[in-house]
Length: 179
Ligand SMILES: *[C@@H]1O[C@H](CO)[C@@H](O)[C@H](O)[C@H]1NC(C)=O
Ligand SMILES: *[C@@H]1O[C@H](CO)[C@@H](O)[C@H](O)[C@H]1NC(C)=O
Ligand SMILES: *[C@@H]1O[C@H](CO)[C@@H](O)[C@H](O)[C@H]1NC(C)=O
Ligand SMILES: *[C@@H]1O[C@H](CO)[C@@H](O)[C@H](O)[C@H]1NC(C)=O
Image (cartoon, rainbow, N blue to C red; front, side, top):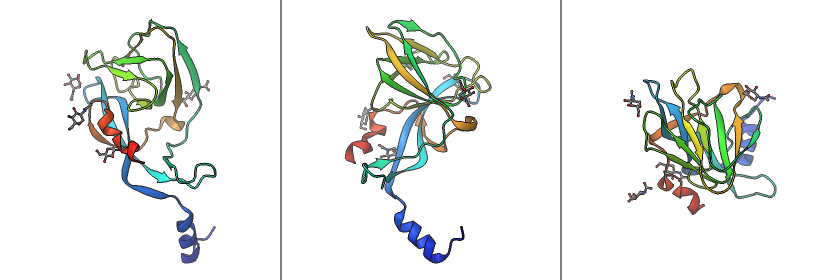
């Protein structure tokens, strides 16, 4: 397709409008320069946009990129997975229950992964090539925990800037409440 000034203008009017200065901030489990798994709060470069998708017109949405496949995982209450690496770069979405992500080199800095904000969408990138021990995962509580694991196509890490070291807190997702 050849883009003339006119078609570009026309498409421009159809494209979603970016919500000004509102990035989606998510916690990543990644590795630092000396190979320890650490938490970082990432501001994703993909914009939050007002969608024109039928049925959701006017809602804010962010395209998170292509994914390879999706696995539904149920852990029993009290399950302790031990230290392990992210098998590949992947999104992790807690659907129910509670998962606690621990850092072997930073005991005490635990991430409570639960449905909703601020950590209902996590990116796990501490693969064996970058992290020497990976992270731990325990599932306390009285019920099973359900998570979705969604690796990206080609092991791609979403474009991002590091907002700050450590996990995102409710202060980093407060902008969603205002939408
Ligand atoms: C990586 O993280 C570990 C554990 O938090 C810390 O001891 C180490 O100094 C960090 N390395 C760098 C380069 O920041
Ligand atoms: C899912 O995708 C990952 C990442 O591309 C790949 O390594 C893995 O083999 C896939 N799993 C299945 C069951 O196809
Ligand atoms: C959020 O920001 C407020 C004001 O700066 C601060 O008092 C509070 O501790 C922060 N909350 C978290 C969870 O970091
Ligand atoms: C993400 O963080 C930036 C910088 O602190 C902030 O301006 C923005 O509102 C945050 N996004 C959300 C959805 O809260």
